[in-house]
Image 1 (cartoon, helix red, strand yellow):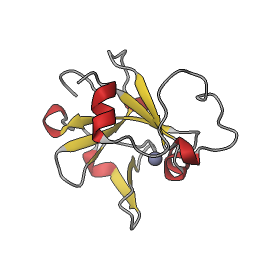
Image 2 (image 1 turned 30 degrees about the vertical axis):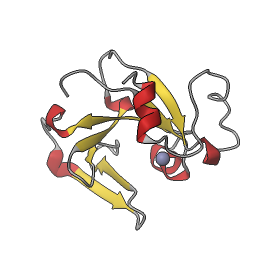
Image 3 (image 1 turned 135 degrees about the vertical axis):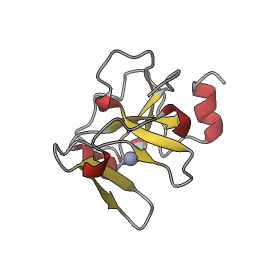
Length: 129
Ligand SMILES: [Zn+2]
């Protein structure tokens, strides 16, 4: 990845919980032009649902990997893949309406919460744009 990194969101929906094996999925959306595969692209396997949810993972190690949006304009990047310190932060909890009942760590952390996905307008406001 290159350029300024956007804010990270944590999604608490049931599908993100399932594919991450945890309480939520932390990710960021970057422009297609900011992303380049270096190696291992041929090892990617894909899982998708009729609703459009898509998860891609490495068949070698099982890690979730970045995947391109349906428009081809951006990549969804799992934040846990970032191996170096980065200049961004978690800015929103999304799909808190379907969080696991045992997932309580985020409730009072002061980060904005959204029942589903924030509107583009809300997201831009969080980004200070
Ligand atoms: Zn989700």
